[in-house]
Image 1 (cartoon, rainbow, N blue to C red):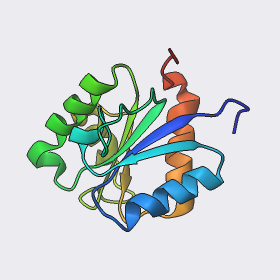
Image 2 (cartoon, rainbow, N blue to C red; image 1 turned 45 degrees about the vertical axis):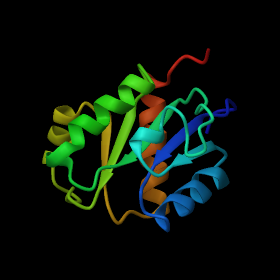
Image 3 (cartoon, rainbow, N blue to C red; image 1 turned 60 degrees about the vertical axis):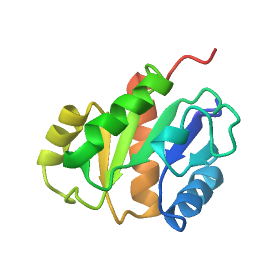
Image 4 (cartoon, rainbow, N blue to C red; image 1 turned 135 degrees about the horizontal axis):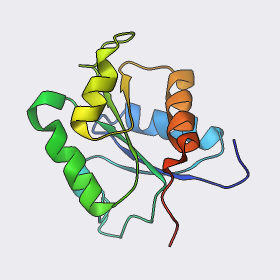
Length: 136
């Protein structure tokens, strides 16, 4: 990872996965914020503004039913910030996942359940591809 500390926002409703993903990313040297719902991505779960972020990792339980609306909401809260979508509805190893990413407006997709290595790889690829947001 580069010397710059990247800030990642995890949007995950599952109370077990959210802290685990945060732990994995923190251990890899990322600064991590978490919220349980996209609606909290602007104000946080305690009403305090979520800091500027470089990447969003969002769980989309039903990508075809509301996934695009969730992504648009996150884009409104964090303009220009790349998004990696996770979902149990995405199939591992299927080339159509990148088609789904394009339809949703995200830079990548990650099938659940995912391993630590798969999460870190997705995050590293999204950040390395030059999609990092400008810090203000």
